[in-house]
Image (cartoon, rainbow, N blue to C red):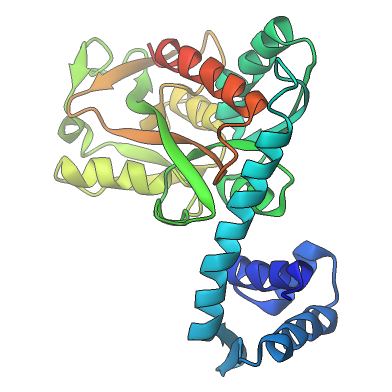
Length: 301
C-alpha cells in the first residue's frame, strides 16, 4: 500500500525542483523529507531519486509514479465534489489568489457579486505573484487563481492544473499628454522607436511582452528606466522621462498629464483562470468562474 503522505512529498520535490525547497513548503526539515522519499522507494522497491551534480533528479520510475499521483489528486477533487453535490447553492470558504491588477479589477468585484448572490459563500482573496499562485494551488492553499500567461508557467499539458483563457489584456502606449503621438487614435510602435523607454523590471512577467511587442515592430527599445508598479511607470511618463507600454487593465493614478494610445497590431498579454485539475466543477469555484467571465469583457473595454 502506498503511503499518500510520502507520495505528496515526492510530488512536492517534482513541483519545487529540490528536496530542500519541497521540505520548506511542507514545513519539514530536508532530512525528514528525504527520509519520506527513501521510505517510499523502499516500499515500492524502486529508485525514485538519483544524483545530478550537487542535487538530485527524478528517476523514470518516479516520473511514472507521479503520473498516477496526479490522477489520484484529481480523483480526490472529484470525490469532494460528489460529497458536496447535495448541499444546494455554493457555500463555505473559497480561496482565490491573483497578481495585483487581477485582484483590483477582477477578483475584488467578483467577491462582491458572490457575496450578494451566494451569502453562504465566504471568499478569501490573497495577492500573489504568478509563481506563488501556482504554488498555492499545488499546496491546497488556493482553490482558484487568475494568472498571467508567461513562458515560465507550467505547460497547459501539466496534469496537475486546469488552465483556461479568461481574457486578452491589450497594451497601450502611454505618453505625456503633449507628446506628438498623444493625438492619434492608434499608433504604430515603430513611431516610438527612438524614444526613451520605461520598461518593467527584468523579472516582471510583463517585460517579455513589452520587448516582444517592440521587436515585432522592428526595434529594440532604448530602456532608460525600470519600474515594478504600473503607477510608478505612469508617473515617470508624466515627468517626461520616457514612454511605456502599459496594460489596459492597470488602473493608473487619475489626473496625471498622460495619454493612453491604442496600438496597431494589438499587443497584449493573456490572463488565465487556473484550478487544480478536477476542482473547476466545485460549486463555489464554478460560481466564481461565471462571475469572472461576466466581468472580463467590460474590464478591458
